[in-house]
Image (cartoon, rainbow, N blue to C red; front, side):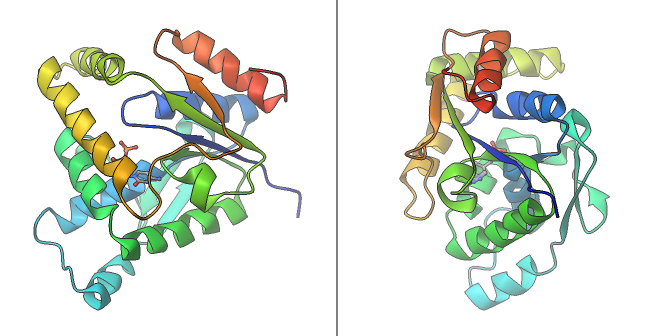
Length: 223
Ligand code: DC
């Protein structure tokens, strides 16, 4: 079997990981894996507050999720039990539920196994919070994207506006800050840069500049 390539992109909410991961995956001609969508899909299905906190029963629920990946680049499709994951998971409320379920070791272990299984099958640009630290620690190319919370809230605000979903900027900033805080401070697989990751502070960069930096990184050039 030919060697598989894994590129990891980690970083906080709203920093632009998905946009960059899709673009880089297209450039490299490999699939892109949105691991946040896996946490969101589980949170959405289980609902908030009604999780079965009993580990054995939660495990039984988790075992009903069969994730599969098809396609490449920005047209990669992540499915659960044969159905592509849709836009129903793309709300700040589901994101917060996902951050909540992501604190549970049983959920993290389950998804780590599923993510590593996909990485054993396909070359990937894998984006999330713990791709470079925990799930693919041996990946040859690791990036950590960062930006101020103000900048990330403002990017999300503009993105939602473009989608015809006006939002409150102050509220968005508070939601993002709350989620970051939980993601950074959980005991298991917290959000942080891998020691060997290239960190890119994108606060004052354009998308084109960030993408150019990632392309340099995967070519082994200084970023
Ligand atoms: O990337 P996202 O916003 O779709 O992720 C939603 C939540 O899922 C995030 O706040 C924390 C959790 N998550 C995680 O803990 N580990 C990952 N690798 C990806 C997401």
